[in-house]
Length: 381
Image 1 (cartoon, rainbow, N blue to C red):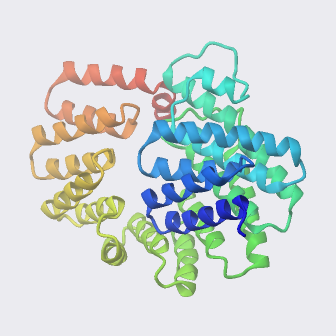
Image 2: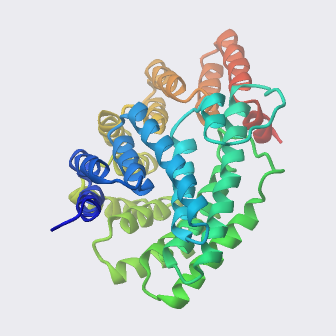
């Protein structure tokens, strides 16, 4: 007779398959059953339910599950301190916690996370500082899991992926660098090293190749990134992630026709990928096809109304068509979505200057400085 533990695991594995195939509602239901029959507080059941809820944009429910998963990971680590999977699992849960939510101080304290006691200078600094304090814990858990199980490729790949993300995050236009926390090139070198170790053990590991390609993109080494994505496509010709990433690198190299060709293959498989439409629109913009580019940006916005970059580039296209008032509206929409964006503010300021709207221009400059003082002054250096 099947035990409750076996039944719970069976539902969990079924949920994982559904989740990986993009069926988040069905996956969430399977995870519910796994939790129902689980009598051992398995933290992974709660973590993957949280991921499904996050994918469904049910963030309040997701936060509850994430909190439960972290609490249960803590309990498992106390009982099985030599088991690397629990450290790796907690790292992933903590990462999602801070990447997906603006968390209040009390919630963090309840989870056992120590915060700096100093006063914060502004809202952006406050959020970033909290994130960085938790990211230190993520790194600690990454390192511990690998030390406990040095041959586990999944642990190495997670570390590489996270380090690559963090290195990119430090350069984003909505964060303070906070160099006292991490060194960007150290993170990048560690990530590449972990990928190379994985590839020595498994030369056809497409995840490692993808991470290396993405790192080269962040370093603006686009030819090298394409080499990595081509290796992935040689192993898995239908890999949509590799096709999209190759299209992006081609775009950055100014090879707009080739970029469109890569994006078209992705659209054939997934016509509702807003990022592909957005970048296809940018290709068309640089080819001087402004009317066509606007149609692509409108498609991207209809799929993902919070994609502020599509509003920015739509505004750029409208300016090329001498529709400045319409462009200004698009820039304002972008700023409402992402008030911290220096790219959005720069466009608006330049347009207001061209339109001889000095008072509005000064107001926007003041707003941008207060919204993201660190990125503003870093950009001006």
